[in-house]
Image (cartoon, one colour):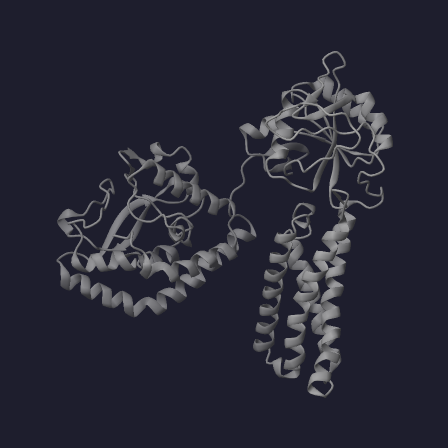
Amino acid sequence: MGALPTLYSAEAPEAEINRDRPSVILPAVPSEREFQRPAWLAPGVVAWAIGAFDWCLVLAAATIAFPAYSQVMDQPVAGPDRHILISVLAATLFIGTFERLGGYRSKHLSSLRRQLTQILATWACVVALLLLAAFLSKTSETFSRGWVLSWIIAAPVLLLIGRCLVHAATTRAGGSYLARTVAIVGAGNEGQRLIAKLREEQDKSILIRGVFDDRKSRLPGSVCGLTVRGTTDDLLEFARQTRIDEVIMALPLDADERLKSLCEKMKALAIDVRLSIEPLAETFNVRGIGFVGTVPILEIIDRPLKDWRAIIKWIEDKLLGSVILIFAGPLLAITAILIKLDSPGPVFFVQRRFGLNNEVIRVLKFRTMHCARCDPSGAQRTVRNDPRVTRVGRVLRWLSLDELPQLINVLRGDMSLIGPRPHAVAMKAGDRLYCDAVEQYLHRHRVKPGITGWAQVNGLRGEVDTFEKAHARVAHDLYYIEHWSPWLDLKILLKTVGILTFREDAY
């Protein structure tokens, strides 16, 4: 749930409330000029209709491509049945992928710019998948290249135009057919926190109709600039005159009797009733509600990679790790020879670092320092022009080739290709141990460490000599853990390849 959208003042007296932000006064009963969505037209129905409209537009583009191509080339398209079948498949893939990416959620449908960008990206993925399938199945020659090209261009054009028309049609009088109308019960601290939270992101899919409270003797005039319309008895009457989709109760969670009484009272309305757990969410990051047997529980922390996500990550590591190691084999051999010729000592440097669940793992690297001056603990940071680094080691560090032996760690299961970088057990940020300097440092060990990561491709590489750098790296690592997907891993991998030879902060 996002922030409070722009609300309306229609024939209501002016008030001076919260001069530091726009004052909002809602009419006791919405005027005829104020947006009113028909009762039967729920936001979910509108989203479903938009998906069906997109499906029809992709087919329409395929249909338009037939006469367009025939007129230009002065010949009909052979085998139209096959072309229609592939267009139906593409339309289904498009809306399925778009829905999985959250494109049909009310919150995202209200953002036109996001919609246009997501349409182009989704269509590009669908086209790439179909072209790959046609190439592998050797059926590409059975389709008219002219028709395919016309269709590939016409479909996104129609989708973009259609989305602009849909956005204009679903937005009326400052409101939206995609917005859920909400009434809030609770004018105390909990209600204030909830409304403040709703204001943060300016989510146009939420439209607050009013604030109510069950305390008749302590009824404030306004909450965060919103007029308090009355008691919960007034809410019952208000809901009969105004379209309300949802009632959110923002009351102390320990007020058992008040909550029970209000729930019983709200059963008189054909409205969704929800209980805000914002006070609890400020302390814990609540992820959802589940069950242990028949006991309902709040889900606070999820294992980042589990079930199918864990399987996909495992396949990614083993498959890509094996391929990269095979192709990098000659380079590994040459590097090993150069290290032996440059300075006495072993080829590999083994260091104890933190792995999954804070377990200590033995990480392999090409040795880049003189043996007598190596620091297995990692307590001594590597600095620019470090005298401990050998001549070959300086080149290896600059090109990040010293990390290549960690492919063995990946195949061994200690590490992943992509993930937070493994830190030495005694590594410091500034003059303090990393785990002491950054509060959420240990949270980054909820996944296997990686050879490269989100922090490294965002410029956070090199010496960690300040607390600010340490906090920034951990913040990027935690972002990766929370937002992991195969596509994010692919993005990091491609960015890593593109920037390896252009980094100036590797030494």
